Image (cartoon, rainbow, N blue to C red; front, top):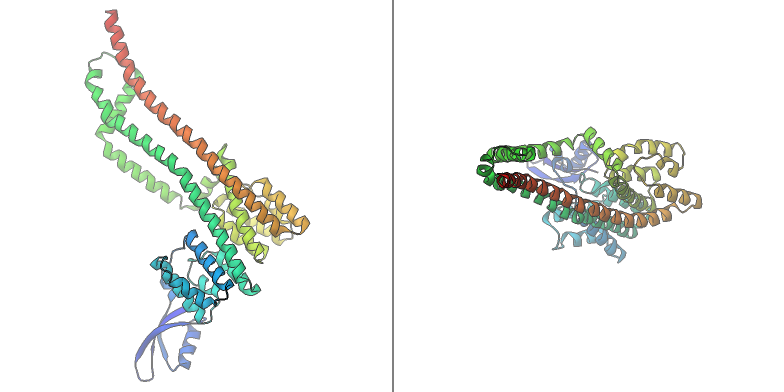
Length: 398
């Protein structure tokens, strides 16, 4: 139920302002009329404000606190109040939790209050809380959600940590090459100018050096333009679809990406299905957590096949981008009647494999970048030494 901010007029002509939950503006008008107020203007609070999604770590802590406090017998309103008063949270989180508490105290279900905040809470946590409110197991579901987002945050942190060193190496390559071409190579201009002829590699190096020395500002501007172009191109759905498709088709890396995407999907589907959410709804939510547009697009057919009565394992077998282990595990779960347990076990196995996949990706990247740096520096050194060596040879022969 939306929360409206309103301006209204009392019978005495006094203008009053406030907020009130109502189904729509007509409902708001009737509610104010019952309070002897005439509605002047209104605005949906959620739609008039810009919210950003909470981080996985914040979502994990939010769900863990809700689950722990409710399990200990504390009322939901009091639990939200304790969350809002926590000194360790950010002002933005305090504002969000306060708004959720305000709506809950007015009789709005917790899941609806979270959904009313336009994207602050992702569909995964909203739907799991909604299912828990129906079944009466909010504490258990909240702790399961906390575990889900904790694992997601840990995986994201491992990816960032693993890619830090390759990023540093890439930056060093750019810096070293820039220094060589911009400052070191120009020192040899007078020496090479006195020589009758230069090897082709040396001429190429000197031409590049002259360009870097004369137009360094153009290179910086060009790099900035390329970065912005790449950033905005990724926002175009067709480009993102194409890039994500290439990711899973790459030699070596493609298999590793598939493991990471499969682990992400399996954990989310396991959490949703185990909470009592219908499989079709679970698939619709889980598809948005994969992180690959090419795979997510294929779920239109997966959902259609599942709705038509096909086995989930058969529907997912058509998806290009998942490992075969997922389909085999789901098939066993369907045959044994323990799909939820099988999904959870498979999610744990795939998460372990995804961690190994990240380590392997870094193991491939680090030596490759070191080799690239060595080749560049070696080629430059040869280009400098070769004409000097030729010059000495000519002097010796003379």
